[in-house]
Image (cartoon, rainbow, N blue to C red):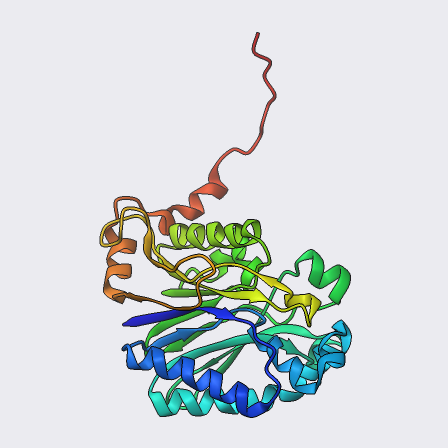
Amino acid sequence: MKIATAAYPIEPLTSWADYARKITDWVAKAADNGAELLVFPEYGAMELAMLSGADIAGDLEKSLHAVFKYLPDADDLHGDLAAKFGVTILAASAPAFDPALGTRPVNRARLFTPTGGRGIQDKQIMTRFERDIWNVAPGGPLQIFETELGKIGILICYDAEFPLLGRALADADLILAPSCTGTLWGYSRVRIGAMARALENQCVTVMSSTLGLAPWNAAVDTNTGMGGIFGPPDTGFPATGILAEGTLDQPGWTYAEINLQVIANARKDGMVLNRAHWVEQSGRDRTVTPQRLS
């Protein structure tokens, strides 16, 4: 299959028509290039806040509610586009208020298939900004979505930096890592995490990024990154583990062709078997005795 992952610029859109046109144009371009799976970034949906005006978008708390107000329409748009273009789309994540999970919003990604399937995945571990300033809460548990393109798991940004979350998705063929990072440090952390998860699980990971300056909302005011698609540095994959990567802070899609059979072959008969040998860590003696060397 062909994967497209976005380096997506956050823009101060002022009408629903502008937003719908932008998303449609992005989906159409990826589909025209033969992509079957499209991955948008974390918090890309925050540009919906400006549809309620600059005063609302500039208020951290009010912007959460403003974006959530448009989420049903945004979901219908992505669902319609998935069907129209025959693609699977991971929409940009957004704050979602879910009464089943409490009174604070979660950071929710939504997956749409061309046959009408819809799935949701919430972020598990909050960054310091999300927990200390924005008061966004952890959401529902990790899931693996069985699709026509294979088994798909999602680790939203910071989640990709935690190996046990990655291990929970060990049966996934693809792990999508939508991100929103304000600095090169943050981008590098998520990228390193995504590459490590590909190594450990002997799977393909797909990282998307937000780009640009958005001073109208403090949550996404600065953004840096690029698209990247990674696999284990093993048989059938590039020696670097990098299947494709974009150009830093250059908007657009990054594409890569992948084959699920190559993933299966690496897991069965790779040069190393990280995924299978993971359990051997628990059998090792973890007693550490300090030794002074003179």
